[in-house]
Image 1 (cartoon, rainbow, N blue to C red):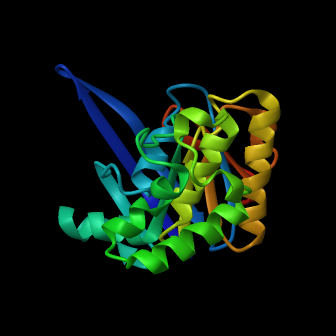
Image 2 (tube, helix red, strand yellow):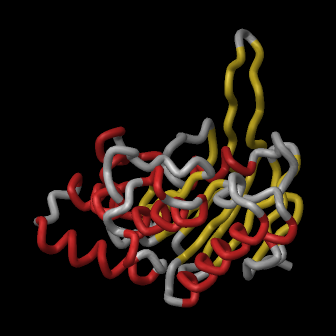
Length: 226
């Protein structure tokens, strides 16, 4: 089991008022699954994803990632664990505009201390997988939206994470390009990647093997759990 999250709570404070973003959400994910988390705006789906990705800490509950109890980790230890285990893809591609495609994909490997030859070889292999081997010297401003998101996906895969998390990865793309990106996630999943994707689109969600629906901070439907 790669994800074991039980009774997660998340409370944000807006001024003096508490906002309950999660109200006891529980989710288990097996390695190799492709899951879509859906729900209306404010349902808690992105908050849940950020906790699963160790970008937010829960206010309560228990979370184990790849057998490791996350809430017990100090900040520095958590950061290193996150960088090794998790690849992120966001709605806004978050590419560095001054760097070309290859340099953007290499960045996580630079931070991990991987030598130049190894990180170039690894990055070129991944860029080939996402169909961008002919764009490696292009800068983000020279790419289409779909190409920019493919670059972001390649960067997320560079360090060989156990888990790929995507927050509305098609939100800034037209419908045709969005479905192409979802097809890429499906291909990566078939190659062994565990994928958890947040989307408000029913069409996008239907491409996943399992759909989890959230409402008011709770999981109200899980097609993988009867």
